[in-house]
Image (cartoon, rainbow over all chains, first blue to last red; front, side, top):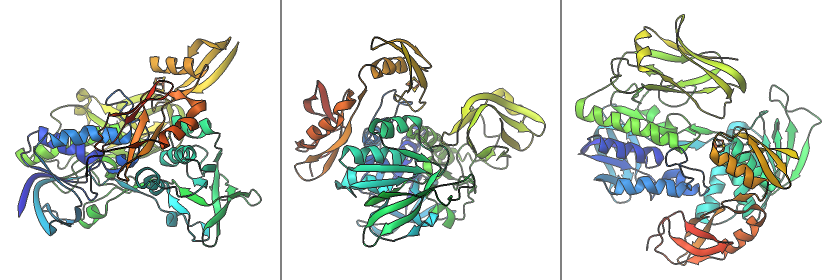
Amino acid sequence: MKEFDVLIIGGGPAGLAAAISAYDNGAKSVCIMERDNRLGGILNQCIHNGFGLTRFKESLAGPEYADRFVKQVETRNITVMLDTTVLSLSGEKTVTAISPDRGYFEVKAKAVVLAMGCRERSRGALNIAGARCAGIYSAGTAQKYVNVKGFMPGKRIVILGSGDIGLIMARRMTLEGAKVVAVCEIMPYSSGLRRNIVQCLDDFGIPLYLEHTITKIEGKDRVTGVVVSKVDENRRPIAGTELHFDCDTVLFSVGLIPENELTKNAEIPLAKNTRGAIVYQNRETLCSGVFACGNVLQVHDLVDFVSEESELAGRCAAEYAIKGISAKGGVNVVNGKNVTYVLPQKLDLDLQSNGLIKLYFRVSGAFRNCVIALSCGDKVIVQKQKKIAVPGEMETLVIPKDKLSLIDGDLTLTLEA
Amino acid sequence: MEVVNLTCVECPVGCSINVTVDGGKAIKVEGNGCIRGKLYAENEVVCPKRVVTSTVKTTDGRLLPVKTDIPVRKSAMFEVMGLINAVVVAPPVSVGDVLVDDIFEGAKLVATGNAPTK
Ligand code: SF4
C-alpha cells in the first residue's frame, strides 16, 4: 500500500494551501486527492474579483487566486490525484478512494488533512410549499452553469437569500441579460457583505426585500411565479402581506454547510454549532493525526482566511508526521452570551511553543459598541471593544502569549452589548 | 454643496463614507478606512467605474474567465459586456494574458483563467 507523510482530501483553496505548507515544513511525501478534474475547487467558478485583498493586496478573480496556489503546488514534489473520490477514512489514517485510472484503491498516511469544503443548503431543508417544477436551482449551481458550462438557467429570476453567492449571481445574471426581479431575505439584515449589496444590487437597481420570504412557488413544468410574504419577528409569514412576482427561475442562496460525511463515518466528533470537526489550535481533530481546515471546519467569509487557516493545518500535519507532535487534553473554549460559535474549541497549552492563539467566532445578532471578552471562571483573560459586530462577518480575538499562563480551566467567550 | 453617503466597495470592510460635493467635485471625504476609499469616493461622485468580469469562448468550445484590467464606466457596463461576448480566443491561454489591447476606453481584456491546449 502506498504511504504518504501527509494526505490532503480536497484540492480547493484549503487543500492547496495545506499541501504547500505541509511540504515546506518538511513533509517528504504529500498527496492531494481531488474529485474534480482540476485543482482550485469552487474558485474556478467564482469568476468575479475581490479575492486576495488581504493576502496579496490586490483584487483577483477566483481562478486567478487559485492559479497562484496551483503554480506553487506544481513547483514542488507534491502528488496530485485528480478525478479521485475518497470513499472512507479510518482512525488509523487509511483512506479508500476510487478513480477512473486507478479503480478502487487504498492509501495510508501518517497525517491526514480534511479539506473537503462545504456545500449549499438545499431547498428541501426549507420546506417551501408549491410546485416541484423545473427552474429551481441553488445559486452555486446556477453559477456553474453560467460561468463554467456557458448557459443561462433562466430569464426572469427571483433569488431567496442574500448570502454573497446569491448577490454575486444577481449581478452576473443581470450582466448576461436576465432580469432579476427581487432578492428576498428572511432576516432584517443581509448575510452578505455590504460591498456586495452595493455593487451587485444597488448598481443595477435590483430590489432587496428584507424580512421577506418565498411562501409559494407556482408553475407546472416550469416555474411561472412566486408568492413572497413579509415575516414577523419569529420569521413566520404575515397573512395579507403577499406579493406576487412573475419569474421563470428561482435561485436559493440560503447558507453553506461543511461537507463532513467522511468525518462522520470516521467517527470524528463534530461541533453542533459549526457542523465541522472539534479541533485544537493546531487544527487537529479529536482523532490524533487527522487535521481539518477551511470551509469543512467553519464556513469562512473570505478565501484569504481559508488559506491562512490551511497553512496552519498543513504545517501542524507535517509536524505530526515528522515529529509526532499531537494535541491532547487541554481546556475547552465555549461560546457564551451572544456568540454562536468559537473555534478552536480546545486548547492544548503544552503544545503552544510558538506564536499566538487566534480565536475565530461569530456573533448571534447585529451589535454596536460592544465588548468581547474571553474569561476563565471570574478572570478576564482578554477583552476588546468592537464598534460593529454582525453575524455575517467572522470575528477574531488573539490571546497574547503572556496571558496563556492565566488559563487554568475552561474558557468562555461572550459579547456584552 | 451636498453630502453624499457611499459604501466603499474596494475591500470587504465596506466603509461608510461621507463625501462633500461642490461643483460636481469631492471637496471632503470622511469615514474611509484607507487611502483607496478616498480615491474611490472622489471618483464615485464624478464618474462611477467598475471592473467587469465575465467569460469568453475559446475556439474549441470552452469558457475562459476574463476581466477588464482597470475599472470601466459603470454606465457602459452592458456595452462592455456586448464587446466581451463577441471575443473568441484560441488556446493556449494562461492567467494574465492580454486578450484584447483596448476593449473599451483604454481598458485591456485579461484572462483570469487557463485554457491549455487540449
Ligand atoms: S476605505 Fe479602505 S478599508 Fe474601507 S472599504 Fe474602502 S478599501 Fe476597504
